[in-house]
Amino acid sequence: MQVLEGTRVTAGTPLLRIRSLGLERELVALRRITDSLANRSAQARGRERFSEAAQVDAARSGEEATLAGLGERVHALRIRALGTGVVVTPRPEELVGRWVSTGEILIQLGRSDSVEIRIALSGAGGTLVRSGHPVRLLQDATLNAPVSARIAAVAVAIDSGQALTARLRLAAGTSLRPGMTGRARITLQRSNVWGAVWWAFRRGIRSDICSKSIAACVAGA
Image (cartoon, one colour):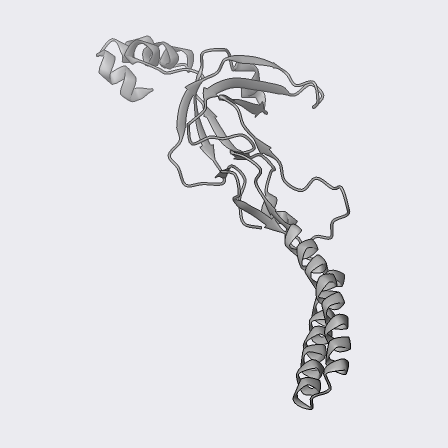
């Protein structure tokens, strides 16, 4: 595996290498045969047995053609990108060492002008999330700084029972790319001085304490 989730690639970029142990064994065996035939041909020519050398050369030509075909098949197992895009397969590094079958999809590339972010909301606080709430996004695959944005919509996820999902869309070119995963921190409410005073009352602080000054109330909160 030569790429990670979210890697941006161009045409011809190596993506992964598939190994066929059977093909590799055939390749090694055929190389030994062609090398042996080359030695026999050289020996025959050294002894001026040109007729025998011609027969050996003909046999070697056939084996070399087969060897070239096997080499192309092995080379075809080195998968390269056909065009520009972003690796959208989640955690492709987990494919290393896994057996695969013919026709199986191993890695996918995506290309778009924007990226949709989906955030699974869990816990009691999930029901308080609304459109417009600020959110900071931190991706798992890189060490890039968090991306700040705002929630665009909140709805029940169709494919996960009654779980809530928040969504937003970012323009292409940000550090977040298709296929990446990470964590999100959503700010439900920012308290100012008067908001802190109001919450202090809600928490049961007496009004005589708050008569000293607003700053004291905030400190007490």
